[in-house]
Image 1 (cartoon, rainbow, N blue to C red):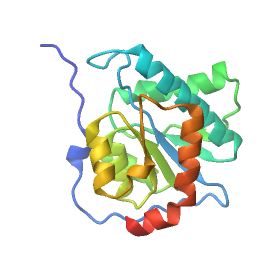
Image 2 (image 1 turned 30 degrees about the vertical axis):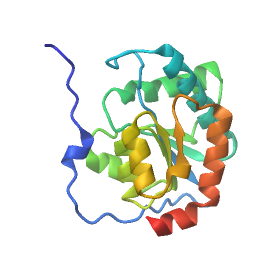
Image 3 (image 1 turned 90 degrees about the vertical axis):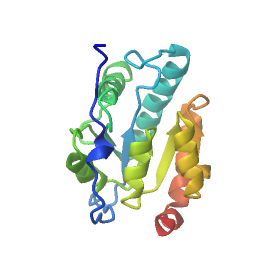
Length: 194
């Protein structure tokens, strides 16, 4: 029916050995942020009353991370999300006039090896899609899940990490910062559990 079809990144996964991530950036911590195009234009249904507050919260959150000295890697695990990655970069540089040189990257992650190369470089992940959460956990990375669907809630509960899962419908920049701070405080116990 002329519907857009996107390849599913996780279907190319094979259960090979995955090493733990080990970011090598001196004392600077690296945060991988994987947004989702949930209810944005291009999603099967649109609802700007849900997507826009999520997007604005994510932009403000990434800006806060950069201002606090974190390095941020924006990545996508699905085709529709790539545009959102670009929109976040534009919002930070053009609308917020934030200097992101050397502090923000948005590498290509269209294949599983490309994604894994990035996950090996980060210390924490903030993701919405189940793939971003699940594949990050394969690297024993602490993940703050911004859940848009019960499958994300269920997975996080099943692995005993539901306290690090927030609802996309209620998220604000402040709630993301607060949830992220809890995640970093508990990062060692999360890594051990994973």
